[in-house]
Length: 88
Image 1 (cartoon, rainbow, N blue to C red):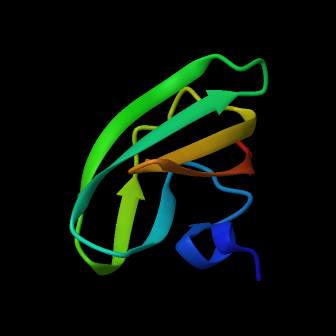
Image 2 (spheres, rainbow, N blue to C red):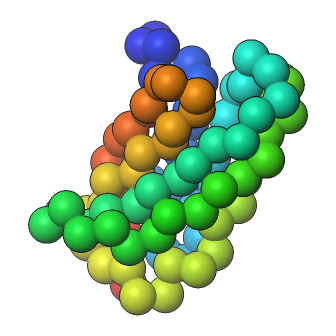
């Protein structure tokens, strides 16, 4: 298991209209979620308040997204990213 998988888990993959992120935070902090399309264009930038321990974040404003996306969570000075596929 990589450090990224241990901190951020995204599902389902592929997704249709909703994504869930499980985020393990070392302390109370604000996390920044960015979602990009395959061309690198930012589609979503949203901050979330995270509590120490496991957090479940549901993202639903995904109606205009299609195909491959890249997500990036910024927690303090660390970044965690991955790719997901959207099917319609």
